[in-house]
Image (cartoon, rainbow, N blue to C red; front, top):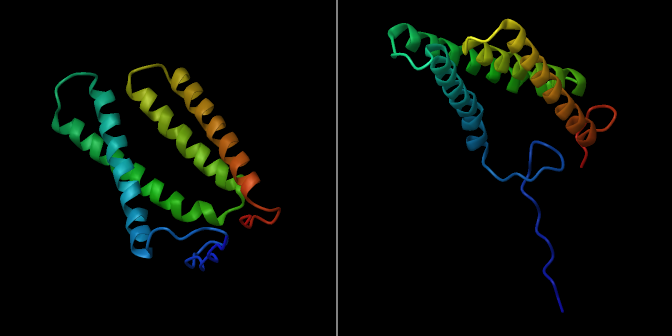
Length: 146
């Protein structure tokens, strides 16, 4: 029984990766993902800060400023972190996740100790997960495995 020979894969920016979406879709996602995540985070922070009370102008301003800061930091990390070695890459994302969770916990009116412990636990968990992932998907020089 004859089989067709596999065709050439579409060119990709990363070696070993299959190029599924167009470059236009990837460039749109680089902007859309931080903006959407920032809006969700800002809404969540504002909702936790008002604690079931009425929505005020100050609460809306707080939510939008929180969304803006989160989106800008997320976009910067998405651009800068992949250029770093795997250890620093994992540290940056772990620190970002830990700070984000600690800030949200603090908005609920809990103690600073509780928000610090939960933030540090989140940062440690994200660091461990990402360090393992980057260690198993890169060679010793930091190049992606094929």
